[in-house]
Length: 116
Image (cartoon, rainbow, N blue to C red; front, top):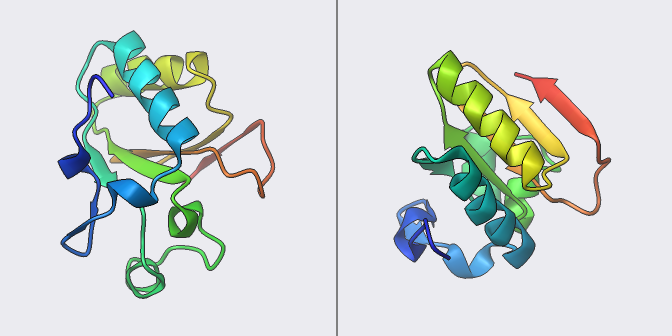
C-alpha cells in the first residue's frame, strides 16, 4: 500500500490490518491516489461486540473485513472522495454527514449507494 499504513487499521485498540480484505485495500489505495486528498479511516474490521456497541448491522461488512468508514465532513472533499471511490471500482457506498462507508462484500448486492 502506498497511502496507508497498517497502523491506520485498528479496532478496539488492536491492529486489525491482517483481517482486512486485500481487494478492499487495493481499491482504497487507488481511490486515495485519484482523490489526491488524505483519507482518514475511522472504522475498519469490527468484533461482534464492538459492532453491536456502535450500532452496526448484524450482517455488517465490517465483521468480515470487507468495509471501512472514511472521515469526511466537507462537501468539496465528499465529492472528490465519491468520484475517486467509484473510479477505483467501489460499487457499495454509504454516505453519512461525517463519513463515507465503502465495502467490497461479495455476499451483499452491488451497484448500491445509500444514506445514513
